[in-house]
Image: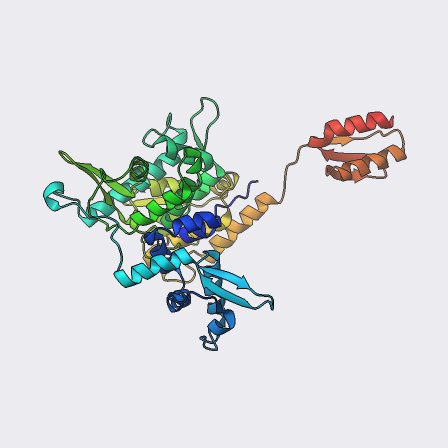
Length: 452
């Protein structure tokens, strides 16, 4: 049974994984430097600001002298992060003493930022041109509609539709790379990753899509550093303000269209000008995954008898609950169902794990039960894990059975050959019987013919 987990990194983990020359390109951009500074732990920010105007390496021992006795662990975390992001360059001398030097490009841009003040990503368009813009509440509703209904719900129902048509070819490439699979003329189907993706919280889903979008950029002939710079620049725009699309280059306009498909931006067209309006989804791009401020209020109540009550009118919530439970009926604002052995076995076969199901139920627990400990009854969580363990006890392996060997020497040599090739499963030395994996059957046949 597949046991695949999606790891959704945050933006700064992605930046830290880039090669050194790419990071140098990024640090040419003031917005990147500001975003990196904001993402650092408090002690990391302190070190950067204290060394900002020092152009010589500073010994590690000198930095350690700034610490209080209880700050050693936080110091290590801060230094590790600064080195990962190449904000600090580690220098080791002949005596093996360590010193740290600020990245020169990062240092130069941050000095300008501190001395001269921040630079706006772009001037919003005047209200005389845009006339009426959506309110922040309307913008939030639009972003939720695009993300949940036009994107997530379409992913779930992809096997029932001929083909998702609302997305650009670049976005479809990303979905088919990890979330959807398609054979010949069949409709696209959710992969193991796709089922697991649906159980993530919105922040984690967003990071997964953005990460895949960046990783796939070079295939489309787009420079990774340019894309990351532009995405982080968008995160500094003001949610609800209108920004002129005509001031962007062709690459940036294509990115804007892709992000609008997911609800990160809203596009509007006037008589002469067209503009985009950032939603909270895009302005949160520089926020780490640990930030829970953008998570929605829970809606699920699980009882000790395995019945579930989801206080929601969302069709998406109903379809997600169907992934691992039996939905019995749906009222205008309530979805009633039950977690059964059969519904869980179906989820496990699709690659969803017990821990992911339990995590989803805990993260989306209704406020009335979220305050309790535990928010999901222990007998339910224990039984979900037991049913998963029960399913995993037996593993089916294609194999071949051999008997009636001409001699014990041939039998023993065949056993040794199977072990050496990683195909040995079982043997009965008394009756000279052997079971090997089907994948080495042809090799075993040839070997036994040579023995005869």
